Length: 262
Ligand code: DGL
Image (cartoon, rainbow, N blue to C red):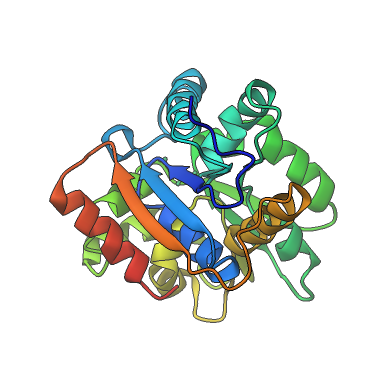
């Protein structure tokens, strides 16, 4: 099982149900440009948020098993849904492997001055599982936090064509009733940073957005540093894309998402 976990030149495996994790990958590359990242999007099985928790665990397990077999030195679960469902089990299974998950950025949102009413947009699984309830319990005290599951939104983003009018109308269906009454939005699904502008179009242009990408990248740096696994300074890193929907068109879509300004 050629494992490079002791090797600072090994790669970091990053995965999501699909294109969403590319929003996190962008933060990872910005924070750690000397690392080699291999991104796997499970687009053939997206969306995860509408599957059973058990199925999300199985799919996540299979992806991490392959990354480990290929010699990953660390894993980033660039998916709030998979982190909530599968991170504890994966960490128990691979106790020596740094496994970094992502969570809805409620902490920075609630700590910001004048945060106003806070809307958390995420998948149904993320909002249902313990991790989110613990976060809301810890950071949501004294704040008005409204959790809005958005079934179908990640699946729609998977299809690209983000400027199409149907996307704004879809978002209006989930959060339109909060227009003008919300100060902050937590993007609790890694697909949603790609439609920040469309969400602002519905809720108001002065709404502040929070997502977990930058925090996850800082956490990866810390864990690699602690384990002595940071790539040598000055090294040029790389990014590779793979998908369970392994067609040239899908991989071209991944590169298109990687090129978006967030
Ligand atoms: N991007 C994922 C997340 O952060 C999952 C979306 C989905 O596949 O439903 O939750």
